Image (tube, rainbow, N blue to C red; front, side):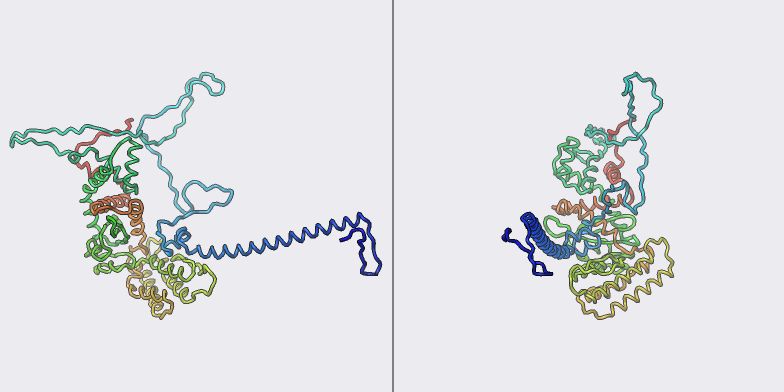
Length: 510
């Protein structure tokens, strides 16, 4: 543009307006700034367009990840629906930004204060001779502050000489001696054996137990010796295991569950039977009815379980189908139909995880099943006493509503399949209403089976069936002691030492 002959024509008339040099320069500067602003606006619009495309991509990715295993594992609502073990679920209470997590238990849990311990070691006195401010010599103290300190004794091995006296019998002239509390040719004592058995039940591998003994106590011990001590403990607990196993048939309510457990690289199965007084484990080479009959044949109480068919072999028992397991069927069906899984007692509406038409028929089926169970469970949930008349009324209503639902010919494949299974097990659906004392869930057995899952993840199973027999005995006594609030180590020591001579102690003396 020529700056010397720049002219502006007014719209009101045809007169020309001539500007001087300075005015022309000012107008050009304003035009350049206007062009820069227009360029910035264009760039901003382009960035906004790219941002919108990125948002749409992230939304699609988010919907896809909602049904993936890692995300499903972050919630107890969706872990089972996505095929993720329930041991992968976590519970976290969010903390607002700028605030610290409060000390103590989480919200909703009862408070538990630590009881004041009783001293069993000499007291430690902290005195002061001179003032830390002015270095003046101090006299007698005015008073004192007391604080109970709990600590571990310094790790040290207790090595003692086991002397067994031998005698000559004047009657039969034979050399006799008392039976020692330890097996012959055994170089390690019962306290060490109980400690090893406890660490193994906590999920530590043999190598980690060996490393812990070496680094904490300076004890060099082979893996074969650790396994031998573990087998010794299990052998002494054989009678206790048989007694606990027999108690399952005498119980009134038993919860059962099973999981895979490999033995020597081949398929095996870990079974658990949980009742009010004990938790019994069984490792069997089969998942069929043979293993169930071996423990529960003749059982006449209420057997709670999932819908695994071998449990039906116990014809003398009254069966109870776990409603939580039924909800897992519903959750898996929801995941396949792009619906976010929901809890059994949740009244939240269905939420699709991706765009599309909602599966109306399936949603109607799962919502009705959950509604029937929710109404039935709330009759007994968190209530210590429920009258017989109220139970009977709730049972009749739940059974009537479920029968009406199962009569419908569902077109959806998942709804038809689940309805068929519920129709087959209609007599076991509401046993918790019909029989007092029966829980509406099977959480006890499912929590107990997680201990075996933990050991399976650490060690991959057992190398031999002898090791499997060792594990089922140790695990049974360990979980039973936890259920009863007893010490597993003390129980093992009682079984190992029996009525033998007392062993020396290295505890600090007051």
